[in-house]
Amino acid sequence: MGYQHLQFPEGTKFLVTGSAGFIGSNLVESILNLGYHVRGLDNLSTGKRKNVDLFLHYSSYEFMEGDIRDLETCMKACDGVDYVLHQAAWGSVPRSIELPLLYEEINVKGTLNMLEAARQNGVKKFVYASSSSVYGDEPTLPKQEGREGKLLSPYALTKKTDEEYAMLYTNLYGLDTYGLRYFNVFGKRQDPDGAYAAVIPKFIKQLLNNEQPVINGDGKQSRDFTYIENVIEANLKACKASSEAAGQAFNIAFGGREYLIDIYYDLLKALGKDIEPIFGTPRTGDIRHSNADISKAREMLEYDPEWSFEKGIEAAIDWYKEDLEVLKVV
Image (cartoon, rainbow, N blue to C red; front, side, top):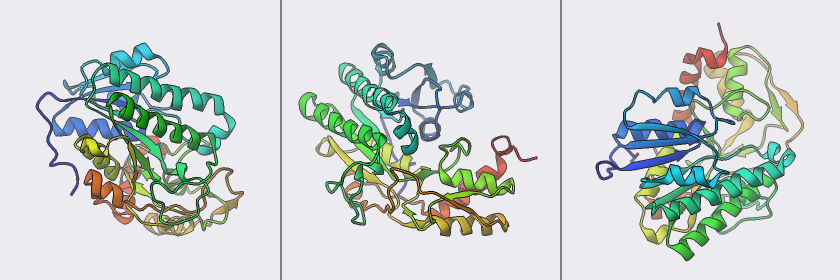
């Protein structure tokens, strides 16, 4: 269970791209605490400088400010690295619908640059963030690898393209690649601000500030919300996985299903608030229901998530309550 028992050779070096972001900074912290070297790469376009500064006191951490759209930067970042955990990307389905060209440039060209740099530098394993959005309009639950529908957004298309390139790099060049299809990750350091903020931190912040949150649609859409610790486990276990599992993509979730409206009322109760939500229009490109079959990751990556939604949401609420600067609560 978990990842704390995982061991790598002494002096092992990890590269985490998108290291100033939510998932990236949590990966950096966990790997440093396990006693290994980490190089972080981020251009700070969506990541935060404070998520870099948190770890600068570690002698085993170095940070490179740079852009994955630049191959030379990717080459330098991969130099001397054993494992690449590629998290750098622009997220958000609605924003990708507004900015398709930018998403292609960052999420596809940037990932291809990283794959090529990893190949040329002889990296052992290339683990990268994919997304549950690749399932598109396929209605069957639970979502299962190999049963995808029509894609619904440029963001989803970029992630599916990344999976195809990664599979090619495994088949053509022998680079071990592992795609992790994240399902609605949440947890500490997830940004609650902005038009494209994820729903859980946004709701928590608004409720703590006694504001009335907006739920897109009727609230009866469901998600397999996945606590950040499960994602860290999946990344590190992919680094230990057999080469037979390379070139494939895996669902990374807890395997549960939560309805948005239920989460909202659970948060009200946990925070001791009595605020009714506003129901807005549904978001274009959103999948209505999402729930993961994680049996393939269990079998091939030995992924065994310990953090249920209930356990994770409790930890997330505690973190946001303490992080007064993020919440701007006096």
